[in-house]
Length: 296
Image (tube, one colour):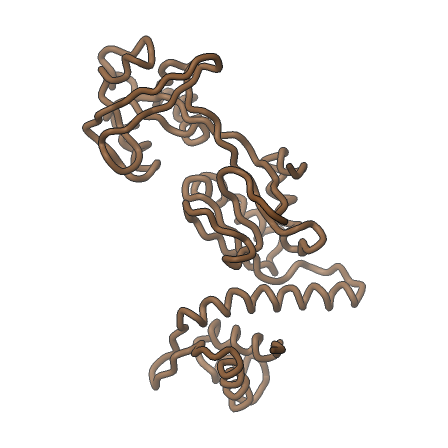
C-alpha cells in the first residue's frame, strides 16, 4: 500500500486547525479535496481517523497513532527534499522523545526550551513515562530510559544515578551510625507499600535494610517534599537533592553509603538513519551530559 504524502499533510492540518475548512484555507486547497483525500486515507488504512459531527471533530485512538507516524514521515520527506535541494536551511519538523518522569521533570524542561530557541521551526513533544518504550515500536525518535537497549538501537550512556540518604535538619533525634540502625529512624518510603528494603553499598560492602515505614509516597517529588518538611529519612536520587544539600535544606546521612548506581541512556535508531533534527537534539544533550558523545 502506497502512502499519499498530500493526504498525510492534509490530515495533520485538519487536526491542527480543528476543521476541514480551516485546513483547506491554510493549504490553499478546496475543502472537498481535503475531505476526499482523508476519506481515501481512512479507506486505505481500514480505520476511522477522525470522528465527524456537526459541532466538532474528534481524533480517534487509531487517528492519534497515525498522526504521530504521519508527522515523522512528513518531517523525513522535508529533510530529503532539503538535502536534494542542497540547502541546509533551518531545521523543521517534529521530534518525539520519551523519558522517565523524574529525569524529564528535572532536566528536560530547560533543555527543550533551549532546543526550541535554537531551532524555532522544530516542534518537540516529550512524553514522560516510567515504562520501557521502544523508539521504533512506539513511534519515538529517541527514548531515554534506565539501562541499555538491545538489537539495532544505538545506546548513548548519559550518566550513572545513585540515591543517597537525606533528612531535614532536626528531623532525626538520633542519626544512624550504620545502615542497620536506619530502622530506628522515621523514614519516608518511595513506591507502593510501607514495607520495603533499601539496598545500600559503601563500595566494599552491601547491606539490605528491611524497613516498615509510617509514610510512603508513590512519586519521588512527593518523597522529596515530605523529606524537606521533616517527615524523616529518605533515599532519593542525588541529582534531585544536590541543591538542597548544598543549601542546607537537607542533610546527608551516612555519606559513604548510597544505592547501587543505575545507568540512564539515550536510545535511538542507527546513525545511518538519524535525521538532522534528532542529531540537533543529541548534540544539545551532549552539552549537558558529555558521555552521550560516545555510543556504548
